[in-house]
Length: 265
Image (cartoon, rainbow, N blue to C red; front, side, top):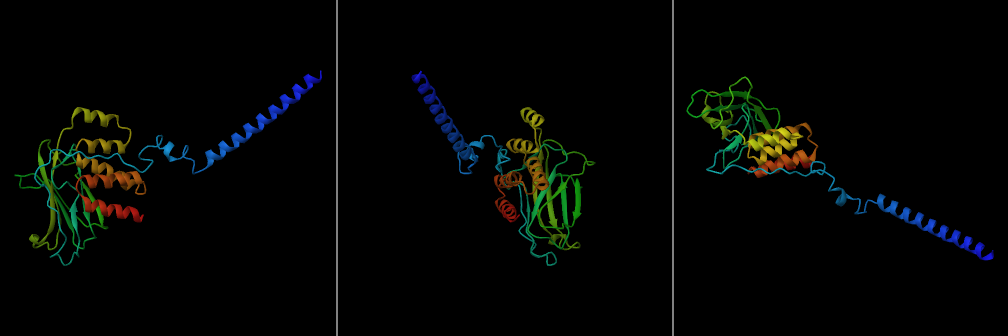
């Protein structure tokens, strides 16, 4: 009888010890989980569950077509244009090859270092055709990236045809030879079937931008990326995608300016 009582007492002691030990271990584990220094539940672990967009990273990779002779002439500034001020003008187009698009009515982009006092003129022409396809004058209200879209009512660009586009600062409307201008080229192409299939199943505009870039469709990648960054200017992934694309297109100075602007936000 006495032996049985002792066994029960010992069992209760062991149970109490085990319960206390388990509680202590659970408390330590919960403290470790809640600790910001805990590597198990920090970004090192959750990084596998976090998308590049959420982490502020970008998968943008521009793969240009076969590079050829330089296809762009960039403006160096509005010297000789006294009323416009020292405005730098550069087109957001590759310098060493013709940028491609799959769009019939693409968008065009350029960069202004400051707001010019003189008006700007955009022109899109087809070589060998006297009349421009599209001409428009404008007065930008702010510096930075400026865009213009080809109106939908105009005929679409023809696949396989190269077109020249330019932006001019009109220093003197009566003497257009004094204009400060830059010009580049664009060619419409028909994307490969696998590219079209990827675009059809893309789940976001960011995915589409990366598909365009990977397929070498410069103007489409730039338009999609720029619209994303303009819609959410404080979204690090969208801004990084735009900066990365500019860098990969050889537009280092413009990318640096956008990076500086991003840092100031």
